[in-house]
Structure formats: structure tokens, C-alpha cells
Image (tube, rainbow, N blue to C red; front, side):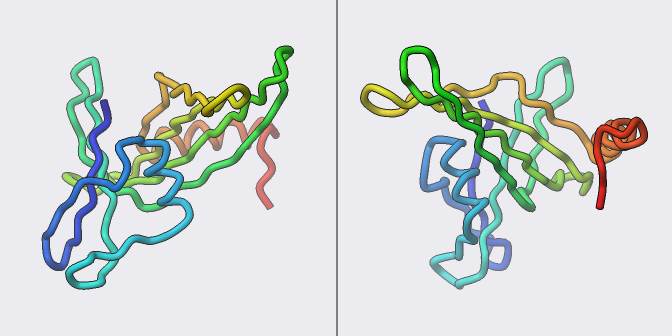
Length: 145
């Protein structure tokens, strides 16, 4: 499970995020900056990833979060919202730029909305991510203005 916390770099105070749900933490980050209650400086959101296959447990500072919504109706009348995120981060130990693409499906109908997390969200450094985008751009799939 991805661990998360906030830290104020000037006063070195860290605290748990206000919500235990990663979806809520990322969504809030995309909308506003949080300030340290002690000194008023912006706090950093840090994520720690337990990667598999011997890739380690890197800690990353979140630089920015982007999100979109795509909705559709199921046959049973419930609305499904696809919420992909693009999370831009800096790896703490080596300053590598990292891109992470988590996503959720939110099913809304009877009662409280149900969130389903995409378990296999890609996590890659800027060189790999840039190479993939460039390959698609070269073939004309992505137009850059």
C-alpha cells in the first residue's frame, strides 16, 4: 500500500495526511496548496511506494497532480466515472522526475458512491515516459500545439 504524509521542509515537521484515502489526498492536491500550521510555509506531499520485483521502496515528493473525468451510464442506471490522474513527482533520494498514473472508477447509484482503485497504475521515470510519448507523437497519435 502506498504510504503518504505531509512535511514542512523549513521546520521539518511531518504529519499524517488529513484523509486516509489516496484518491482524496490526490484530488485535494490538484485543487489547492496546504500550509504548515506552525510556520505558514507550503507543505510537501510525500508518497512512499512499495514497488515489487526488487525495485525498492522509493519516496517521492509530489510536484503536481492532474486529473480528468469521463462518465457513462451502466445498463442498471448507475453512473460510472473514470478518474485518471497524472502525478508528477521527484524521487527524494536522487531527484529523478517520476510520472505515476493511478486511476479510480467511481460507481454512483444506490447509496454511497463505490470507489474502485486501479491496481496496476504505471510508475516510470521521465526518460521512459518521454520516450513513450515521443514514439506516439512521431506516429501522429499525439499532436502538440
